[in-house]
Length: 149
Image (cartoon, rainbow, N blue to C red):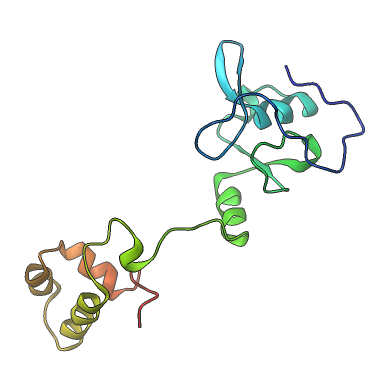
């Protein structure tokens, strides 16, 4: 059980129990289940059950994952949460060759684009570079490697 009394402090109140290994969120057992502490703190402060907020995100206004201060928490959608992440610069997906999943070098991507500009089919380009045609399409539309000119 998490106990915070009104008025809530202005500063973060960090959960002092166990932390999830990914992201640093506080976790605890509640009603036989492992739950994130900030979700439970939100529910207790707003008089709702965990079931009532199922499918919703409890977002941190303070951008501090272990914080359980209800004044720093707000309910939203997954899309809201992803927007928060992007606005706060936490979407640290490595770009280009720094991404462990990259199959091509920057020069190869330039070559793919040059071949497409010269009129080669996506199927032919994919075969030449031993990659799937969908990858060639995403390079062409700049859904991937968009940072590369």
